[in-house]
Length: 102
Image (cartoon, rainbow, N blue to C red; front, side, top):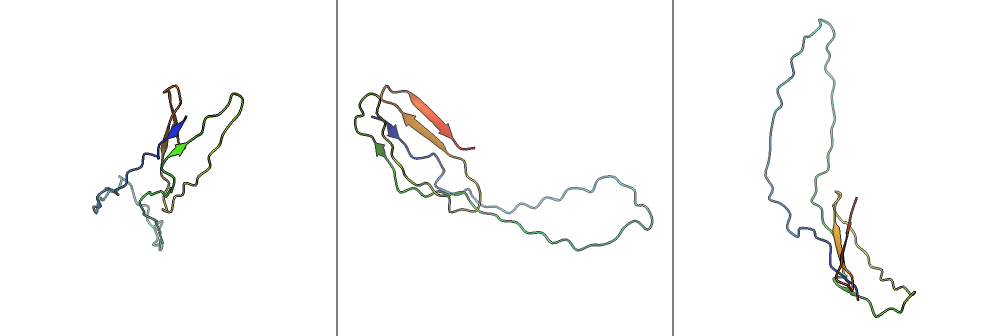
């Protein structure tokens, strides 16, 4: 039998705090007549990583030699940012196989 545990992802988002840091302007020399003002438009997305998976435990039936079994389930990321995950698979001889996201 092979047991698959749910991915290790924190269920609580981290505490939010506003951070305002200003970088000092680097040393420079202004050349007369070379400067101009332009409008700069910037957009950004900020979100917390999250996942949805209705499957919490996978138990395979006994499998004969040279046969295979597969179990499919869906893991989705409804957030707007990438999240990393780590699967820990425990084999029947108690070896742990670890799979991680890229």
